[in-house]
Structures are given as C-alpha cells and as structure tokens.
Image (tube, rainbow, N blue to C red; front, side, top):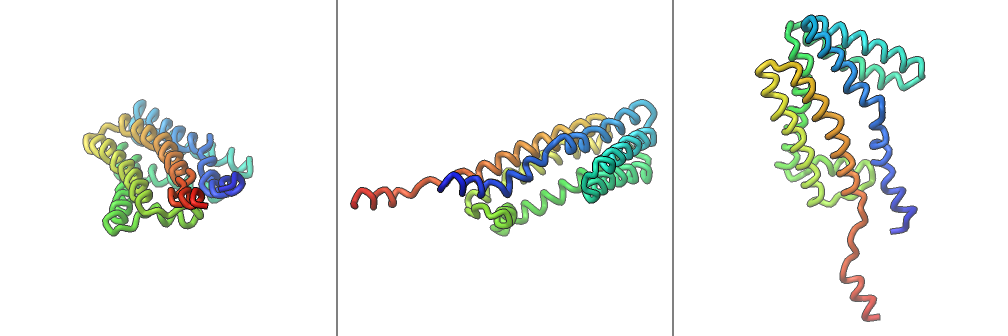
Length: 207
C-alpha cells in the first residue's frame, strides 16, 4: 500500500482520536471534582450546587469561544441529569448512577454482539472504511467488553457501599484515560498494514 493511501485510510479514526483534548479532560474532571468537594464539605446538595456552578461557567466560556452548541448542550445536560438524580434521591452516590447505567447498557450490547457472532466494532469500522476482519473484531469487541466490565466491577461495589469519594475517583480514572488508551490501541490494530501473502512471493520467484 502506498504511503498516501495508508494516511487516507487512517484519517477516519485519527480524527476522532484527536478530539480527546483539554475540553474532554475538563468535562470529566472539573464538575465531578466540584461535586466531590462540596459533598465532603457540606453534603450532597452542596456538591450539586458546586457542580452546577462550575458547569455553568464552562458553558459560558464555550459559548463565548463559539464552540459547537450541540456539544455544549450535551456536556451540560449530563451534569444536569447527575444533579437531578442526587436532588431527587438525596443520595450523593447517585451523581454517578448514570455512569453505571451507561456501562451496563454497553456491556449488554457488546456481549450480545459477540454471542450473535457479529462483533459491534465491525459496524463502526465499516462506516469508517476500515478492515472488517472477523477475528480482529472479535478481539476488539472483547477488549471493549472487558473495559465496560471493569467499570462495573469497580464502580458497582463502591456504589452499593456508598463510598462516594472513591466512586468519583474511579469514575475519572477508569473513564477518559482508559477510553483513550483503548481507542488508540483499536486504531493501531485496525490501521496496521496487512502482512503480504506468501503465495505472492512464490509467484514472483517462479517468474
């Protein structure tokens, strides 16, 4: 494969990987940190107030910087949902309940795709114009399934015993850093050059 073709083939996934920038770190860290700080100082409602204040400031900054409104709304909406769960139940641990629910859903979807013999990463690769090798996608889907299972294996026990601060730390550590690492691994496996077929070399020797 020519170098130019290789670069073109890598672009569909390289572009999303570049989007793991400071904004995603801020979204993952700052509102949750504000919640945990408020929670430790004065309880769940103070934590919610801190998270909403920080999230509102981030919205204002991003609007002034003319960032995409859809992404701004999604980030702020996630914090609003977390805040509503805490206010509605009075329990600080429910600030992270949506994280556990999302990971449960992902676990079911990825596991179901493997059971059916149709790894879900194939669909993603097809849309990006990347290889659809069945064995490779069995492995990739298994890797992502393991990540969702790890989130639940750590997060669910902490949720059940009401360890809110530890739950918040786990939410960040198992979130963006591991997601980024696995996304990079997936990209490299999908875009690495295929090994040349031995038969081709044999034909060359005969000629």
